[in-house]
Image (tube, rainbow, N blue to C red):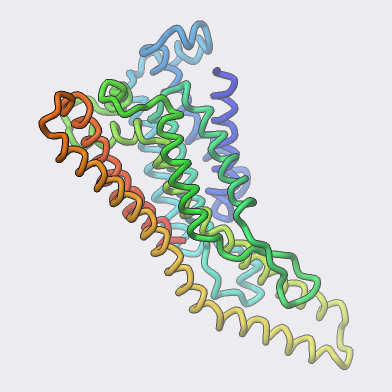
Length: 368
């Protein structure tokens, strides 16, 4: 178990160092920052599991537990959360200031390109928060969730060849209906795969007080929802990442065309027909700039269609629950079966759909 847990943390640290801090920090500092973020979360999870379920830890990492024995679990959790908050704020500020841009792309005149990777950067940090909130035995599943997301992108992507020759292939936008339905299935599947059920007794309260030392209804409620709905939250934000991946590949393809055209100019020198190549380069840059507003509008429609399909599903499920509760309001099982189902339906509709899908997902999509 702990071999898989350590592997999941290493994979996440690698993704944070290579993707979250890409083009923001030097590779050495990005690696140090990623380790500094992941290590407190791992140490807290190790000590928390030792206190909550010592049979899962045994004699593992006794030295680490001895070094951190003077720090209580509340302080360790707060250290992990503060590090995540600082990293998230730093990534947002530096990317918005332009530090996440490719300097070579800017030199080639691609100033109109935005950093579509910001959604992926924030998604990796959110994944670390969800791993901190979930149970130790569920942490390896997030490693497989990431693998499933990559496979899903390759299955749903539709490759197309650019007009320009000797330029690499990029993908069209993902089909919204297929992607949304798959995200819905994966979200509900992950909810049950993480050990949850439709029974109130299955709610995990152990991670609801991470970093909380006093009476705080809001903090406990947020942590409780994040710990029990960690899988659905992951897939909800993963939808925004999947929809932005084709835009990233198209930007890379456009930059590749500009780079190859510039390379041809440098190689050919002052030959007579070099002016034609330069004119072609200018025309390609103009086409990319002219197509940017159209692509933005198309992306806007993609996200609205995605949210609309999700809303239809949630509305239909809520309608079915309400009809069942109304018709069977005098049934013997109204408080043992239908009441918990009603509470879960409200949690899925209000907390997961309105707050996570529309709220957090919309923010991730808007900052892409």
